[in-house]
Amino acid sequence: MRGHIREQSKHSYRIKVSLGKDLATGKYQAYYETVQGSKPKADKRLRELLTEMDKGTFIKPGKSTIAEYLQTWLMDYCKPNLSPRTYDLYCYICNKHIIPTIGNYPLVELKPMNLQHLYSEKQASGLSNRTVQLIHVTLHKSLKNAVKAGLLYRNVAEAVDAPKIQRREMRTMTETDLHVFLEMARDTEYYSLFYTLLFTGMRRNEALALRWADVDLLLCQLSVTRSMQYLPSETPGNRITFKHVASQVN
Image (cartoon, rainbow, N blue to C red; front, side, top):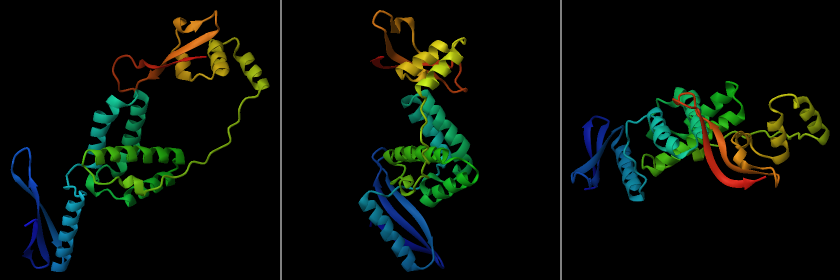
């Protein structure tokens, strides 16, 4: 039988569902669950479990907490696959905002209402919508990996809406503003950097990574081949590193 119910005591029933043979050990596995209440309630729960197995959505509950999973996700996925800055950001969001609040929750028991409460709590504490949205993005990405790894059957973050960011109209510098700004910066050591940024549209990290080999004074061109990155404070040794990018000419 795929599953059966045994009465343990009055108003308590023990469900057993066969999970088939473990390919690694060759032993048959089973999932057990206790239901408090009536026999019809236990019958309903058994049907739900069998339906989940048929649809491939059944996940055997584990003991891993959200905190434990996030730490593993940060080290095994984020650190080797993402830029140091992005990895540092995810570490900060997890350790500062997510783990202290819902870190003790079992991963498989996480519900959309838990995330909605987290977002509301963070907004009430004074965090900006932008920061709360970063919390949502971090959770969404981490739970997406949990689904791929077979730890969850769905990403509960998809059922929660992140707060919208209120966009403000950008005010750009006029030609007069540019001249005034450069005139004030002329006698500083940053004049060349500011001039380059203003008239090429380069990113700050790209400009800081420039070498004389990237400068062609004859053709008045700059080749952007790398960007500078500042590693997180817990990284030992040199905190400055350079990442190669697709060659661009300005």
